[in-house]
Length: 266
Ligand code: IPE
Image 1 (cartoon, rainbow, N blue to C red):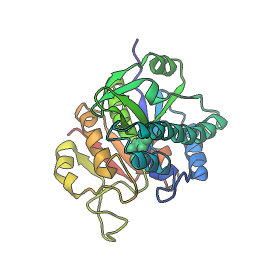
Image 2: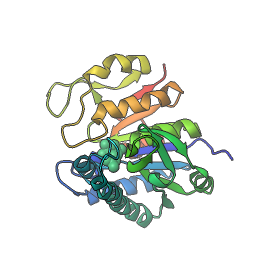
Image 3: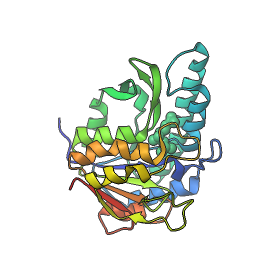
């Protein structure tokens, strides 16, 4: 079974939640993004969202990323997955009420990692849904790991993996800044936005990209970019836009010129 080249949209946890709070969803932003997605009407779309103030604080509290060392962490593994399903429920609510045939797929039920990297992917259901015209929705999750017992799998690793597996036409990454900067734009006033980068240029500027200040167990912006590099190397372009600002995701989805950072192979 093969799939017509999908577009993969990642919505960062810092866009749909307040990363400085705990379990703090931005429902008005979630609704606007659902509206933009509906308006864009992309065929063959996969959506992946992050954890923000749902997944990260819980995962951090119980040391889920580092793996199973103590039975007391088991409730934390369960809780991390559970809070992600709660956030996913809010995203699903918005998508379905905007008449998008979105269908939630729990990554922890179809993906298994080995030392934090995806090793097993049961993708029959995802592929069938995609072929039938549904919009599969996944998220960063607490997953089983063959070596660690369990770990945290970032939405970005899922995006990069699925993009390569299905030969995606494009990856759109919605973040809470205008794109990639040569310094943290939230701290440095004169930080410069990179509008276009090739993979080799990206490798050179990687050291200037910061991590995240809020609780983030999957490595902030640097972690995000490192995950995407293999997909770009395979020829899949990445458009990074500010999903906190209206219409940026919409424009990126329909291929219209938009402010952001465009990353391609060469
Ligand atoms: C994290 O997913 C998921 C958990 C912590 C369980 P991501 O790493 O994709 O989330 P964001 O986008 O950084 O919030």
